[in-house]
Amino acid sequence: MNRRNALKATGASLLAGTALTTSAAADTGDGPTVVSVESNTDSSGASEPDEYTVEYLGDGIVEITGVTVAPTPCHEAVVDNIYQSTYGDVVDLSLEAGSGICTTVLAELAYTVRLEYETEARDVFVSVPDGA
View (cartoon, rainbow, N blue to C red):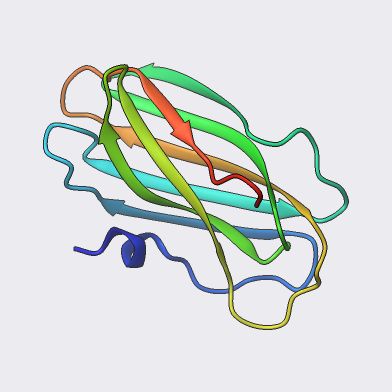
């Protein structure tokens, strides 16, 4: 299954707020079994980029909440890949532009990624593209 296509949501707003929620099963071996992604953009100003927190909610559920800067308010966060490193699981995020007309202004993009493990969750880190 192509995870990028499974996580892609349709539609983007011409105004400041774009919201999407998607979920799909992610077959990464003994890694997370369910990935859900939600992102919102706000073109009223970009804050400190690339900040995130990881919450371990119990029962193998991990929630990542973060903020980055998108080149336009029509971008959304998608999970490109989840892989194991020496330190834990790394969630690779990318920004994808929606279709249609969009203003060219930097936007703050807030995202939430929810992972579900069949067993106890490992340490989780996030990789966000530079120079969004």
